[in-house]
Image (cartoon, rainbow, N blue to C red; front, side):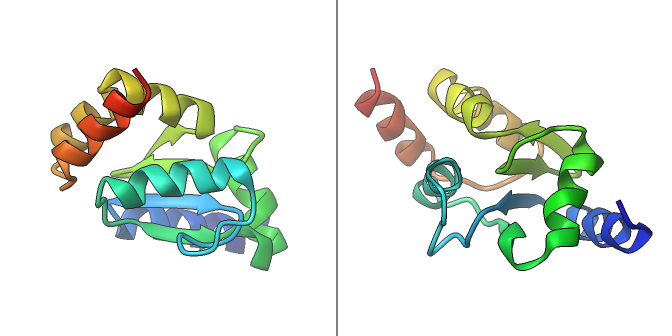
Length: 121
């Protein structure tokens, strides 16, 4: 990973409470996994920064090196790597994502989170 990519990733994660590195954007995801995580965050009303890795090869590879995680999407909350699609899905359904957001002072719609769980029960 280039120093520039590492610096840009680090600066972005520090400057935003919630960051989603994804394929596409929150409004137009370009893979199913990115779509699922963005959909959860959008539905729950989480304010987050979306970074389209498809527009920058240095960031696309750099984020994998930065987190030592091989896949995209990748979610960060308050500077900490949380996980990819499977982990975020599991955390959403178990309520762990709610807890993580609450502990970090990140606003979200609890009723929306409950609706996701009810729909998947």
